[in-house]
Image (tube, rainbow, N blue to C red):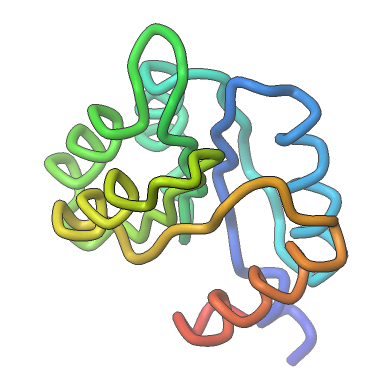
Length: 130
């Protein structure tokens, strides 16, 4: 059942185009489909409603609407939505607060693509997505 791996549909949200590109490359390398990308929380919520992804990777600090507010919108719209926060901040208190508000987990940015691949594979496997 080789299509089982491809069924992992992910929305990637980050205001940095390079970070979105790296995440997309890594996710596709491990067999996931990036169904949409967004550069801010407002766009993220619109894409979430349109694509109904299996998982949303959501940056915390973004313009227009931050990831914390977008997480709230997403979880209000779909209480079972799986969201993993992305943080570039060394202070993990904000990311941990997001978990308290319904995020499944968080990933620290600034890793090499290889390190990111290991982290994402581990998290997605743990969630039963791959």
